Length: 456
Image: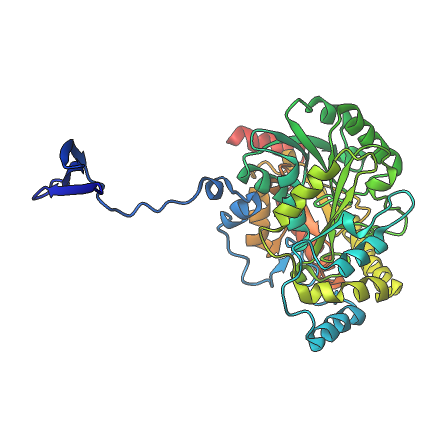
């Protein structure tokens, strides 16, 4: 005979109903007593991961409730997007490559999560060299360099571990890490040494929970480029401490003529490296969202585990845009050298103009860049005592002169600001002129600053 169940619901008025549960088995009735019923109710809450996700740039910029001077046209030197002003278009070969793929109709479907094999082969061939050999199996294609960094962090670090991040440094590292429950330890860069790493400070931060070291070269926000000897010293620290490197090299090869870019993997004999890059900056197409991870592991320290982990993580979404993937081989092979040269010549010219102009302004100390698209400027705050910090300084610069520079508090480095040098030359000159006018208006010599402090 089958078992039968009888559930009696009792309850009235405002009281939650009670379930009077009887279990009837082979003719015998057993009472299980009264059980309080669940009253359905809405309880939708944001996830813990979403609550831990925090973008310091957005938080600071969005809190800057300030209107520009209506008498002056706004000049924004804050956004690291080289396409904004239209003066840096990508090359025709790049555009034609995408048009041909689109017209072919052959890349409208799903691709493997790590990218098409032929496209991975194209990236491997482009970056392969005797010092750091690559095959297609060493390449994972991603949705921009940002996703490459996210996947690299996710495969190397667990919640509760820590990563070593440059200060000043790109804010995304911290945003991603904290959302994953990973602690961030900030190591110092030294402006007086062209933003080289304070190696002693870096090594002092390593402990048994350190999962990886992030090295950003060329640097956002500093515009610095590490020398070969300095990169070798960084590798020596990583080797001694047995810490793998996540190399953010999205600005790779974007260095000025008097400087040489060295991919860190070409100098490593034993330190395993995940190098993250993409099309965004060098090819001037950040919106196309094409990035990659290059796996350098000549001593087989990562082994299959990290490679398999990256494969599984890439399967969370179905990879980057297939249209751009289809165009990738032609983009890498046919973009003419003069395109890169012309872009760098323009950036170098703007960097020199900006550095010279800001160096002549009392109270400001720019640090000469060697590559990328940025320049960092120190504010000698003792000469601007009416401002509390770099955020207030840049806010007033907007309201009085309609020039928007990003306060370096966004990069964990107060009392500096970052200038983007991709804008047209005439805008750079106009912006520098307005910054000079602003500083002359507010600058206080030693005595004046002291008097102002006494009046507070």
